[in-house]
Length: 149
Image 1 (cartoon, helix red, strand yellow):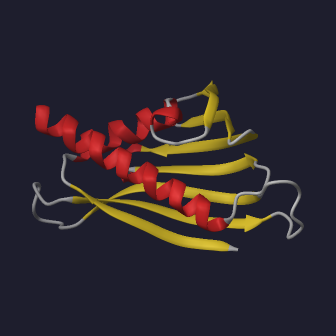
Image 2 (spheres, rainbow, N blue to C red):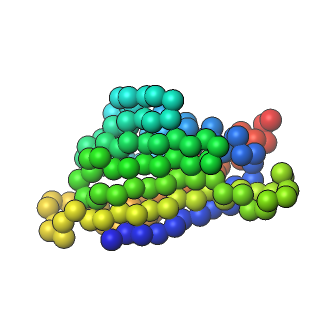
């Protein structure tokens, strides 16, 4: 079981960071390595179905968007290795200050489907490294976008 919380400080407005998370949902190839053929196959007001090829494997997820909570909940529908979910969310570092930095937080709750290794299977450390790299790209783009005004 892979249960982890990853967090990075981001210096930008809440709206800017939310827009980056939505951009990441619509264009994951901009933020993640190994993504091909990414598309949203279904969209409603707050639920999306995302499909992509990630490191040569098909991945399908249901994403629940909660803009007022600053949260995207990605539930894995089809994944070669895991079941479970990843929650990407924006957390305030201070309640009172509107200029305080934000935390971009990824909560992982993933369960490996099988302990049998079939072919080349990406390990948990590679997955964590990929997600940390993605977070840094989201942070960088949000801070650059905010500084341009």
